[in-house]
Length: 268
Ligand SMILES: C[S@@+](CC[C@H](N)C(=O)[O-])C[C@H]1O[C@@H](n2cnc3c(N)ncnc32)[C@H](O)[C@@H]1O
Image 1: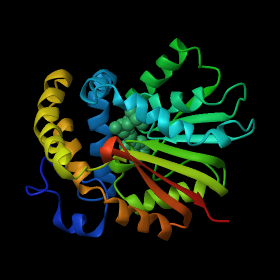
Image 2: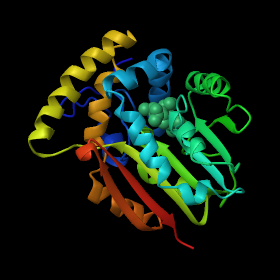
Image 3: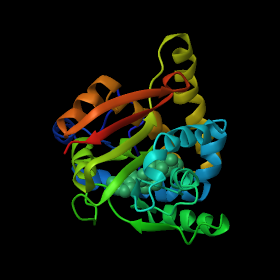
């Protein structure tokens, strides 16, 4: 399977591309085929995902997960809080949330549609002695198997950008959040200025080359920079968040905008 490797060489079905704003791996004809391609891609890199994450980000990813989790301390310290970490992958964001709970025991669920990623998350939670407090569920972020208004907090780290339809993803987050519930979406951005120029060379040339060698899989690490380019810029994303019914919407850049955290509250 091939994936979109460059915005200018976009072989995604043109009609699909103009209808839907979301991840569009090469060959995707509709939302379902895009989601299938994304799931297969993450399943193919699951065995090396953690190693690659830490190497390619120089371990800054740990700082980003920690910064994100601590923003939600007030919710995480409520004993009865219900928390969902969407697109949890191998669980590092979920573990960061769980570490902020102190002696309280909110219910924290990690959800992902790649079985291979979840198997790793589950094995890691046993190693970390957190198997009793965390649960993992195989689910599509666009069709969550939860009732309306179920969660107090929904997070997603580096996963939301991969959804085949961003607005549908926001609507689904809004649906499962209780009124007054909060979300946090951590994802990559595109830093500007001189740093941005150096970073772009790293992100578009060096990172895909290293990623391909270590993972042994060609497509995914070229798809990564292409998917970041395709992802809405902060202003546009915040408009979409308002339209989805969130208030107090904000974006906080991390590490000069290489990553950033979107936050908001579900209106009553
Ligand atoms: C880049 S990984 C991020 C994993 C983890 N949150 C982290 O910070 O390392 C993206 C994850 O999103 C998952 N994903 C993408 N689209 C999804 C969807 N529609 N429903 C559920 N999971 C999805 C993938 O399977 C993958 O595990």
